[in-house]
Amino acid sequence: MQNSRSSGPSISPAAVVVAAVFLLVSVIGINWFLSFVPVVLPEQASAESKSVDELFYILMIIGGVVFFLIQGMLLISVIAFRAPPGDTGDGPTYHGNPLLEIVWTIIPALVIVFLAVVSYNIWTQNSAPKASVNMVDGASIKINVTGARYAWTHTYATERFDPDGAQIIINSGADLHTYIGQNVDLTLQTQDVIHSYWVPAMRVKQDLLPGDPAQGGRPTQLRFTPVRVDGKTYPAEYPIVCAELCGDGHGRMRGTVIVYEDESRFLDQFYEPAIHAILNPPADPILRGEVEIQNYICNSCHILDSLGWTATTGPSLNGIAERAGERVPGQSAEEYIAISIWNSGAFRVPGYDQQMAAFGPDVMETANIMSPEQLYSIVAYLCTQGEHSDCDMENASTSIPAAIQTVFGYEVDITFGLDGDAGAETPDAEAESGDGSA
Image (cartoon, rainbow, N blue to C red; front, top):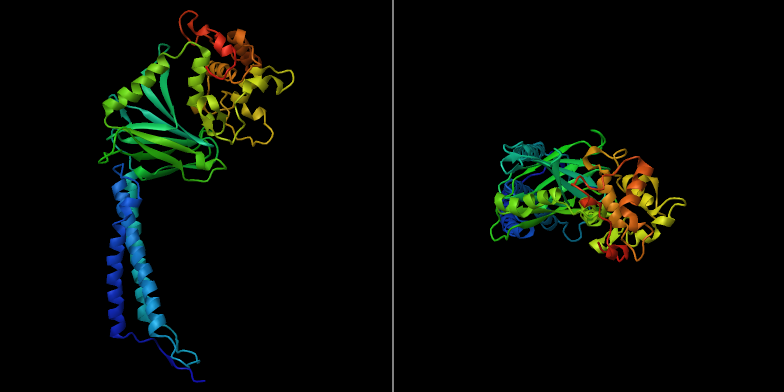
């Protein structure tokens, strides 16, 4: 069988014209396709989102042209160079075309360098530190984000202080509150595994990495500036999701960025009310506990009907007061609940993995330590969750602090630092009935 060989394939002018026409059609088609992209992508809700979307368009154009050009040339080759009927022999063998190989090496290399330069410029521009970050009422405060399976916690270290001189820290749970034009600078840490803080509408994403410092995780930074979106009603809400698989509750690890129209509305609707609530908390420990427990990540794993929690990663808290006294022989219900919160690793409910964060000062990183007083109020609240309670609710103001001191050695200020005995109120008759409400 005769085998024709040549030093390289010939490229006819017609083939060049066909390739050029197909390239033009590809560019036009990709531009038409890109006109529908804004319908698919989230709103451009930050100053950084425009440059990120421009990079996305560039990638789509280059990728689309390459895809359609290759597929088109493949289609042309199959049709134009197909074997004629009855031809069962091998086609000609070519050993390469140096010019063609040089061209298809240089062009992709230039494209990659171009994309690298553009991407790096956009990344440095969007991640660079900004002036006047986290400005609130004329002061630059620190905003921290803690990730833990399976919830986000946002805290604001304010410039305000309580009557005892302690800094007021606002815990807004899974919600990040900001306003249009605020240069947001977040410090992110993880309590356990790698998480990824992603706000699609802001076009920002940052990993949270385990490891010291002080067992709180390696700090990482995320920066963005919210902008006005035409036709949007404020305060506007944008979802926060975890973009790194972190366990079976990964899909539920969500939060919300709440953007106010301006700083004055941010102060009036969130900041000042939050500080007022901290300075003037309920004196009743049960009511206080109902507020306190929602400042932590318990809702990410537990069911609790009275607060609308629906997660199933951890054991249900419905009726916890009915069974707490029977969990560990010789241990009171108050002691069991307190230990479960401050040192969750001490117990493991059958059928559930030990993933709960511990909040005690001896086992927890500084960022999320729960004070004895906070523990007291949360235990008081959980002691009402059930048709009847194993806790001594008639003497809750003494039985719960005594339990905390017995198992941890910490004294509890049952007045919460208030004057007189305002904070020493015991649960009322309705709470004692254990109807699950506070």
